[in-house]
Picture 1: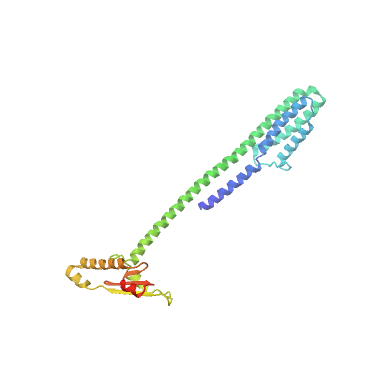
Picture 2: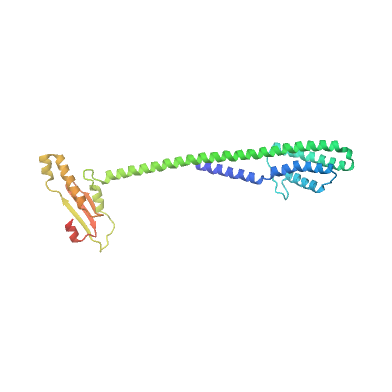
Length: 276
């Protein structure tokens, strides 16, 4: 479940990052509409008719409203921003009318100034709305990042706990294996392990030397009868210790019964067997 939530949050994070990337130039163009209008009015007052700048501002305004054009300006789904932008577009049309009128009648300077101020205030509010929208997306991204990190840490804790449980289970299985296959009195393989070793169904190659030693410890019963079972246990443990000390590497050593022991080894020649 946490994995699915993590993937969902990661997808939301990617989508919001894409929104930021797609609207990265939005505030820039909104600011150009605000500053460009002031430059246009200043040029008009100075007697310079900057129709080229007016055309550029027209293109920016049209694309911001429609989302279609060569500038790559995207529309955003924000009610406040879109309402302010619509009002700004209407005010822009009014400002252009006054500019054209001012070119014919210089006495309209106060009206030009008033229309310019009204437009600037609307443009300023639109820029603020665009910034608020971007800030909201940035906040979402940061929230998703924090949630991703928290869930990632939770998953790490869960997997670490599962790994610990697996290690504990392995230790328990190892301990159970010791109980199941190790003779507690001698530390050698127990009777079950001896039977499994002797009944191994895997074939043995003809050129493999295979030797099986079988021991029957003498005087266990008399020892138990005369000195007690504790002494008998020591006799068994002592013989098992002797077997382990004499055993060559990779030799199977086990207690197959009460006083019976076996050893199985491969690739040991007759001389080495006699030495053992």
